[in-house]
Image 1 (spheres, rainbow, N blue to C red):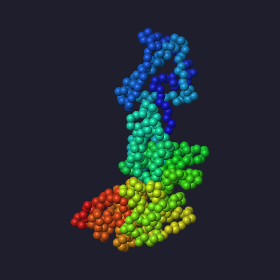
Image 2: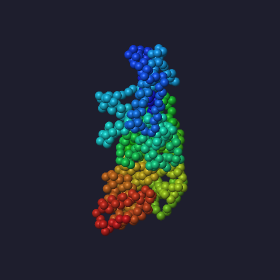
Image 3: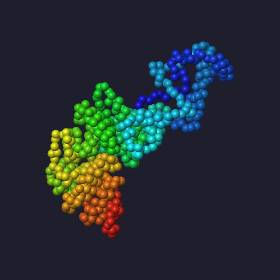
Image 4: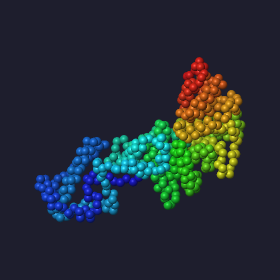
Length: 564
């Protein structure tokens, strides 16, 4: 957003008019004012009066601001009287030459008196909201949004902060993250907090997308990409803290739309990798926030931009992964296959033998030809590689490619869209649907590290819950081995349903399976779950919480249930 230069501290009214106008106006001096100027000269010579420098250090306080303002006004009046006196004597108006008279409008400004009030505050607030945020950003249900005056006050404050940092007086303030103006956008205090959050707490898709670890070097150089990632980071923070549409989220969303729309109006019709990735992140944000219709609109525009570029394969590494992730989210929302073709072959981590051969074998359930078998082998190897003892030696690029192929294979088990000429070619049993959904939830929560409170995750929770209701009891309870697999499916569903009504259903079903299998303590339950798929950093704490819910909700006596 272009920033107008600050008005001259002298407040000289002559700066708001053209030079010719100044010389014409100041020549008309009344005799009364002329006599007053001569009286002032007799008391104290204006020619010899010196001026003081106004020095500002640190943030101005109420006291220093008053003293400084008085000193500036005093010196401005002295300078004005000196000029009037010299003109009265010589008959020639003193004109200060400007170094740039081509754009005098940039020196103009307006003063607003403290006593001034607006007669239509509500109308002003509405027009300002529409201008800043845009219709696409403020599509929020009235019962879910915060107080509008509070939100707009914070948005206005963030805009003021971002403009303030362009002033050299404030740019070198203590604690600024960008004191030398190296970033592509100005950061207010809320934005600086988001940037700190991005570098310290934002782990979503850290390996899956930012495999090379250099994504921020592209972000800081492109305004659209910068605003889009902070828009997504703000949503991530909101989901963690239980907020919705925070001021920072609204601000960066509106700015991202503004910059992108300006680029879409480019008559050349070419779109950079950064612009396409910025749109893809807006698609991801709306999916994570549960606004699927709005996400679909953005997705259609994204596909047109990619076709103009010559296909998704024309994009560079990290930008391509951002786009394919948005395609995966869209396919998961609508339970269809990905729009783009597979771009990467399966790496060795995907196809090699499992590290632990004592685990339950998925081919006992569905046979060797099932794609679910290959998916579970890759999930187990990837989980092992991401665990604490092995993370230091992790090949991030290979892990990223494994995550990509895992999700592509999971989505390829969905039915193809009606317009697709390719039928579902892989061997797939209807009984495998719950396991496939649970594996996808695990990939999102344990590997990609999506916030479990996301509406996108909840959509899969509902899908898993619906797929199990019609099957229990049945095929999944017909043998002990299947019941152990079912216990893991319910465990993943219970983790993802935290804070939702479905949590109680998953907990209740786990209690029933544990009674059937003779599991009476948390240690035994942990051992069964480890036979299927387990990553200690992710699963251990979640199991502790689930076990507490199981004990509290079960009607079995305390003598049978022994907590750790």
